[in-house]
Image 1 (cartoon, one colour):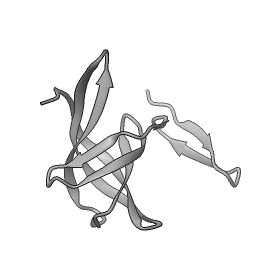
Image 2: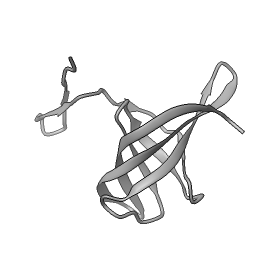
Image 3: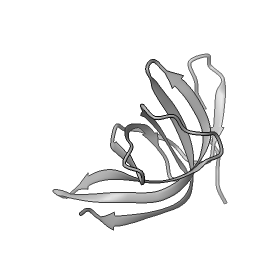
Image 4: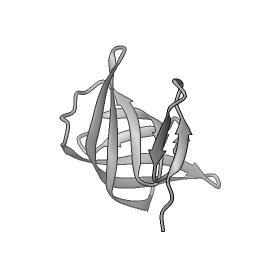
Length: 106
């Protein structure tokens, strides 16, 4: 059974989430070669910032570069764009994970 994680926002309201987020900046690469940087990652989604525009509801293939035990690995997957935010000169996008897997880095 999944439990919701209560997260207090700045205005003191509680956001209900299925999975806790980890605030982490990691390289984010889409299948078309576009790059960005993650803001937060959870088991069910990722929020990232990039220069390119995305369409709400679109499905994107991506990978996130991870480093563990002195080696590089990739979290590769597919996600649906569920939220888009203007962030200064960049675009912020939230993806709901549809598929994910760990792969050896090239």
